[in-house]
Length: 190
Image (tube, rainbow, N blue to C red; front, side, top):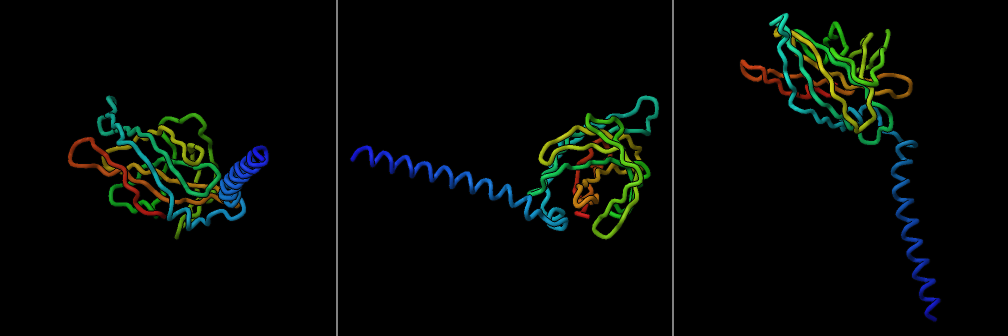
């Protein structure tokens, strides 16, 4: 009788463990079977950015360098995140303005070069050549970008889906006051 109770208890524990593993795997597998749409990714991604360090170039006093840690998480997306830094003129719309150069000042480990790639944004299409940082979804990287006082540093957040590159959003670094404090702001999910 005691062995039968132990057998039932062992069987019950086994069933609970299997059910838990199946539940965990279903959510992981469903990302493969039913991946989120670009629109869903654009609406649901999250970004963590440190307050950037700003350095003045001793040779060219009008030139600054921004250095920051960025981590992007796109729920349900199993691919890599592509990050490109640029600088746009003050007053330019970060969603529609293509920075003349989309490359970090200092290349992080794992950076790749994209040549003549079409990037699809929400309402725009851009043809770019850029050096970009490639990071796993949910992992971070340290980036830096040189710019001058009349420019706004930006970061493009992009993903690869169905053999196309999509821009999920743009982050701009807004100058606070007259000093060298720049704070990140997700401009639009564009």
